[in-house]
Image 1: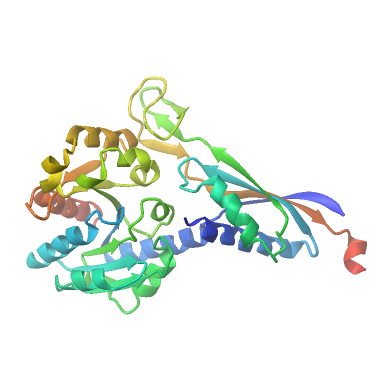
Image 2: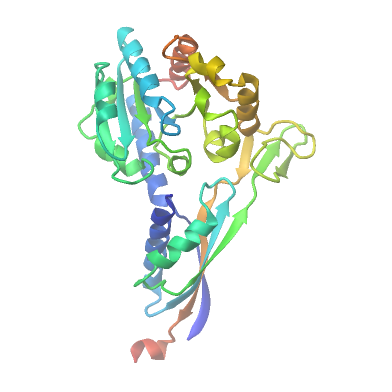
Length: 222
Length: 123
């Protein structure tokens, strides 16, 4: 017997990263801007996305969504009420979406016919941050009911985000939400990130969000 | 808790790499894990015992080297190591840092194996 060190230097998620790179190339070629929405369960991702899809469709923008959940197609049915093409991805216990699941569920969709594709990840602030889905923009969502220190508790996710959305701003006062503290914490973890303070009930912050989507699409050259 | 799927991926990668060393036994698998990799070393170790059962990695040690976050600080014009992941400011000048240079790694660095000598393989 001889003892030997074998150097591997291999990314553990290399397979996912390679698939994600392939997806990214497909999105770019098709001219579709892809966003990955990540938050805890209960933040209001589905309500936020439902509003976004409905509003963009009203303006003649071509949108579609993939939605991940452990079980049930409740969210897909809610989102489909916007009239946009929606597909549910049931992960059956897996705590995140991965690139392979996305690739499989895009089958039969003509990406070139879309302006935006939204991916609503499984409600989880830990695991989705490791899995690249080929998205251009990762959006971290946080509701006023969750506490201002959420970004400090989940720095990995917030640090990997390109934009942050605070939801349920209509409940800020009853919840005693400290807005400055929340903004400070997000900036501490991801300095300079774009932050949208929104409520789908009151409508606050949503025009800015749509403006951001349009800007990013223009920037991406799509 | 995606540690089990990460460990399964480690088992697959190491097993593939053993093809070049017939009959080899794995003593140790060494990982480099960034402080922002969102995996918990204790959970990896816990899952490792389960996921390696009945594989060529059974009984091997998992050694995890945690890498601190390194950012590039523009005003200081140098790479700086952060003490934790609660603030992405330069520990020297206090300015926010935007450019991550290290901290998301999740990779197998190397493995230590006991290789069968040629005579043993033939025998």
